[in-house]
Image 1 (tube, rainbow, N blue to C red):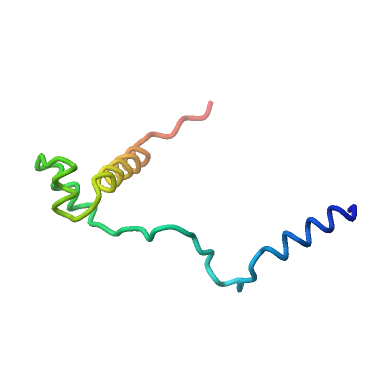
Image 2: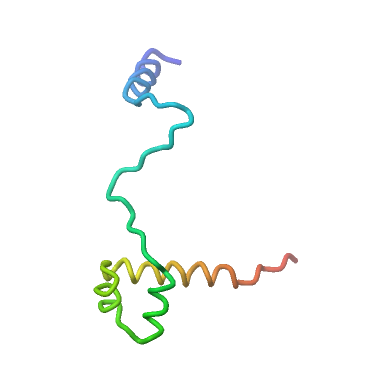
Length: 86
């Protein structure tokens, strides 16, 4: 390694904070909001709009939409047949 590479490597190591091996990696940002997906599903099947569901459950409208979309995507992935090998 050249002296430049060694200098670059040592500066990267110096900027990385030390943490214990068993300590989980912290992610920044706003904490995730918990909600009842079953309740969102039931309200949607009753014909409520996402706006009304969000108001009723004190969630954001986008949170309700994303929750149902993610649930539908997971269900579709579970039901998708595997491609057969030739």
